[in-house]
Image (tube, rainbow, N blue to C red):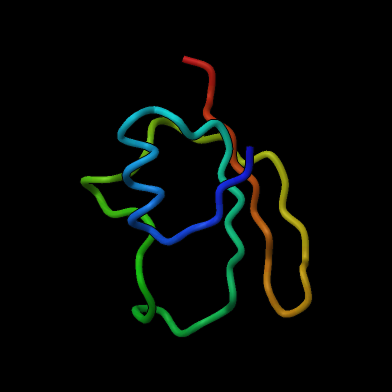
Length: 68
């Protein structure tokens, strides 16, 4: 199942250990601007970068949980 949403949705699902994969679309922006998806207190378990691809002016990064 794919769930699209804001950082608050991600934090709730991750807290319940319900996220297997993150697909994060990144648009280039000046450093220090924008909303952080993860901070030091909400960072998920170890993630493994699976793929990166150009998507127009953005970059789509796909992460999966690393085997523990």
